[in-house]
Image (cartoon, rainbow, N blue to C red; front, side, top):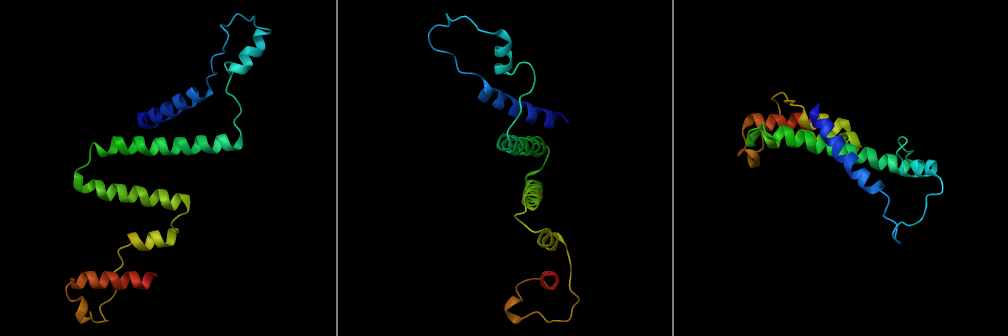
Length: 143
């Protein structure tokens, strides 16, 4: 849970930097007209309303930050040979969630369907093991 909290705090700090008002030029000798208006302008009274575009950017920033923070935390405990598998799964899930890869193609890719022996392995493909040929035939049947 602290990974998600850390990622959210990182994004919050970035967004707070963007929201800070720029210092006024002229030395600040001017008197404040209405202190209540200043509180509302600075946003100290409560959270400000986000436009649809800002909300979408904020959600994308949070998603990216949480994903990267989770990966940073997770990768510390993995062996190098497992990192490739985990990052592949993570990337595929992100692509499926964004709609860049159809779910049926993803399922076809990760499923381990083995075709029934029946179609003989061509001579050109004798370099691969019989089980790999059957897995390829299983994929062919899934598409």
